[in-house]
Length: 379
Image (tube, rainbow, N blue to C red; front, side, top):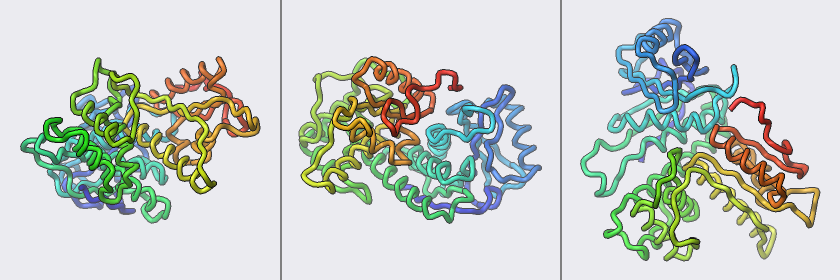
């Protein structure tokens, strides 16, 4: 597993095999995202090189440069995050994760990589950490064949390095990275080597610092979601074996028997009740975690629920839980009143926003931020 640390030094000062910088898309060419902290000479050199190479800063664009003045790293990697929502706005967390992941995916085998968070906030640093670890994955099973392995050590460079909230976010990123890597290994395992019964037993067993629930969530997400790609006609054989394993362990039920992978999720939340308040809270937290894992592995999640007929002053259980969870509300959209025609129309619009990297909390309940999405907002 790749080691993850944070540092409040500048990107120019951090020594290593590579320095990763995030760029954004402009009308003319790629531009470095704010927060890089580099000197004028270094910035001028990078801007000239990006212009010469006709870099645009589009999503998944990765440019590698050597002999960059003013930095300690031997290699500078500029990775595109696409367009910002509006001039001067911060990058969306998903755009950061995808950009950083695209870079670290191409740096396998290196000993030490520094990644500069595109901004100064904890949220931007957390998204950088998650993307770095998710992108650094390398298949650890026999299916991989000969490979150079993942990056051994990644340092996230951010002014928020000493913030206690970032420490919590880094722990979550590490847990998510471990669970995702293990889930990918299971999904990539040949079905003639991993049978449903043994698969289910492995999923139920704790791995590293990840909980069994989180591991099962990640296996499910990797099996049914196709990331940001278009859906294919049928599940790959390995993904089908993964679902069979979860079914054999009585962890999920699948209807119909034949399903196709998707890139987005509509999460229908019904009433959530436990024998006591504490048990209800645990169940709600588990559902929120599942929604976040699905979001991290796909193109977006919208949690919907019927109108809360029992109490019109609040939204339904899971919708309310997502809305009061500040981290979840940043990446997951919600729609209450989904049993009404208006709510169903809002669901379609909210799902479209998710594909554009936007989120919102919609409906008629008091904790909704708007009744419907703003169709005039840039996407």
